Structure formats: C-alpha cells, structure tokens
Image (tube, rainbow, N blue to C red):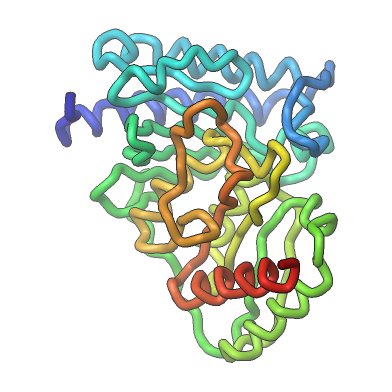
Length: 296
C-alpha cells in the first residue's frame, strides 16, 4: 500500500499532536526514578525514567487509531520490538525522550522524536519537539522542512564562520579522538572557516537539529563492532528533516541509513553522518577512509 499525499498529511498531523502533548509533559516533568536497561555500551543508551514511559504511552495512545486504519507497524524505544516493522509497508518509529541523560541532568539537548518509516527504510514523516525551547521541527517527504509549523529556510553560511561538530559526550572516547579533532581543524581551515567548535551537550536528535541551524556543521558516529551508535528512533525523524532541507544524511560510507535493519535497531554497523553540505560530508567520509587505512 502506498500512502497518498493527503494520507501523509493526515498522519503528520497526528504525529505533531502526539509530539506536542508529549513534549509539554516532558517540559513540566522532572524524573523521580532513574533505572538502567539493556542497551549499548554507553550510559546514555542505558538510562530510562518513568517520564520516558509516560511520554511513550501518551504518544502511542494518540497514534493508536492510525495503526489499524493505515495498517502501520510500531517501533518505540521503551517497548519490545515485535517485528511488525518488517511485516507492514510503514511503521511509526518513536523516541519518547531522546537524550534522556540530558533530561535527567536538567540540561538542554533532549527532545521528543516521531517518524513514519517505510519498510525499505525510507523516512516519510519526521516530527521533533524540543521541550526546552518549545520548538517544533517537522517534514513530510517531498516537501520542505518546517519550524513551528511554518516553512523553514536553513541558514546559509559565509567564509569566516566556524565549523561546528555537534556530538555526544562519548565522542571523546572514540579511538583516535585527538587525530580526528586535528583533522577536523584542518578541514575547517581548508573550508575558510574561523576554527572548529565542538558541542558535546545534546542527544542525537537535537544534535542533528543544531547542525541544520548552525551551518557549516556536522554530526557523525563512526562504525564500531559493538552494539550502539544510536538506534533507528534516534535518526529517523531527523533523516526526514535533512532530506527535506536538501542537507546530507547517510551512513559513513555515503549510503542511505538502514532505518529498518533486520535483527537489530542499532546503527553502529555502518555509522551515521549528518552534514549541512555535500563537500563537508565528503571530507568526513575521506577522513574515515584514512583512519581505516591507518588501522589496516
């Protein structure tokens, strides 16, 4: 079944309503109970609070009427993957609070994220709500991005701007970190930028939104053998936003993100790359190839 433009708009309106209600809940709440759950190798991927679960329940309740009507699957962070995403033509992909560690600490960098993804991994709808700034971002495939439900033109950049890397605090533990930072400074200089700025305060969703808002900028995760590197729900909504904005979203090799990976939701097998332009993305891919060559 292929969804029509009107059906996609209808589903986007449901997702916007769900994200707004959940975002307002998250904005008002403070976590009372912090638990650990199975996940990747970082603390950020293992912590969960009762607010995550309340946000998820609210989103699922709001979107529930669409599941049967449009024959949609459901993948959400705090519930077991039932495999429906592989049996349906489309599925909701939900992160009730991305950046839970920031939420626990009371620092900006967390968001509610909802995406509609095709069985082939294509992102069709992306909705993001920032509960700190009360800002909405959303996109429907084939249409331009919107901010606070108005058309959003991504800022341009001029020579002399700084190159920004928006990443998580675990980036400093990446093998070869110092060499990566040195190489990024070299890329910034070659691009005519004033320098390199590293912001390691946010989760994956807000990192991607900050990339679009502060060009030239990037967010990337290098491949690694361990589970981690974020999951589908960390990247699906912002992937749709980036495609709508004409920015770059790929794995580290330049291929589309595998947002409906069989057997796992983790993205660590091929890494991720968000960049404001193709030239910058190409330089980061070349950097990865050089690193692999040195290790080889």
